[in-house]
Length: 414
Image: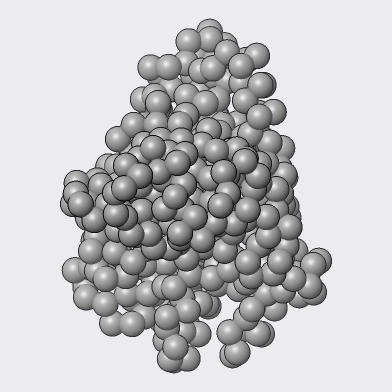
């Protein structure tokens, strides 16, 4: 019997004892059930629940290997995730599950069970578009991002944070899978080979592999991701990392967190909302659901910009940073990044090797091929036009135009 003093991958029975012996969450004689609930590629997530009163705890353990490819991973990412959740809980407490315990030896993070909330990706797929989404998403983004910049933080403390949250292995994944491989006909790493739907090979080659202007724009976004240590970002804020119900949202899984451009998180949120809309548009989703998704995207874009500006005025006190010209350039830059990274997220989920269910669940080529082309077209538009003062109305109108053309092949420069 282990005393949990050395790392090993736990099975459900181990987790049940862990919840008693280490977490002291249950009494030794209390009957519990433990099930693995995670479906990710790099962690094991367990729910332990009391048979007596239903109390429950989530235990998330990191693995040393990527399950799909066997790629080795540093367990330090688990510590980063725990520290990020605790920091975000101080900044935006209503959106973060409570962390009960972090065990560095076992690379195990124990936290509040949020199973009354549901995976947002699956909720949107089922046509549940909560009216509060844009308000809560924009609140979380503004509250969690700007306060971690050195516009607000003490500069020495910020530099210490940048060092602590350096996360090279998981950043490598983003730099490769999001910001490199989708634009290359021949992969830099054979493990990261693009997966292009049969019938779209020529479209992808022409619009992604052979567009040098696009490559220049993506290079700038890649360079910004790697060198702009602007704020502590979640780093993987797709709609599977957001859980929702009628009451609100919870944000989980920030193991990709590091100090990077704020726009990467904002863009991930925006890009993943577009997947839900595209899926409904091409599979006969109701007009009501499509309208709700469009409105959510538009409002999330604009409310995030507004709330970042309000937070800036409230929190930034350094005189030079309060100069109107700098303030405008800074905030405009954040939103330009956001639209650009929304574009790279959309493209990588269509042609890269890590896709989303909104795309893969569409099996009819007559729907799948034009949907993918429409998404690629939108992604290119967002990347190329990101510095042109885009807003929620502009990007949703652009996608409506792409949908109206019915083939996802219109010109890339709007």
